[in-house]
Length: 196
Figure 1: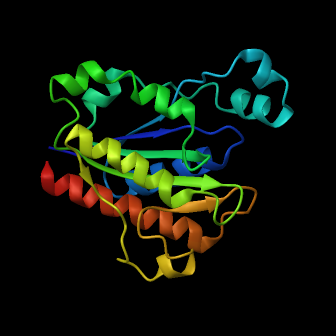
Figure 2: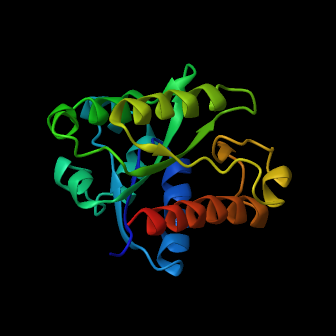
């Protein structure tokens, strides 16, 4: 059985979208079948169109499908990426997760490995609590948290976060940042392969 990875992200201005793209490339290189999916936008269209950068990101990713319950059922592993909002995940991703009661109720999210990434506007903007809140949800699903821990030297070059990669919004993605995302993704694919 192959690894079927759903990469689900939410991105207002593009940071988490870029992270998801880097992860998707690494997962495909590791042999996984990948679905790159975005959480549905819940902000009013007038608000999105009222901010040029937000509107541009929405237009840029219009071709990326929105995540569905069917995608969650299809996948045997999940990589979730969303910005932090006041120390927890962005509400758009939370709103999507809150639609999963039916599949959760029949055990459809259990026994699947999950890893998470995030971003914030500054270095101490709530990244760790955001990742921990995502992992709390995974524990309620009965899923397996696959955090990167300190399993590769590159993690020390990118902030040393053992919970999952976090990026400071507005900064370029260095080679080390890309390597940290790729390492975390490969680790998830490896664990998912063993479970499969």
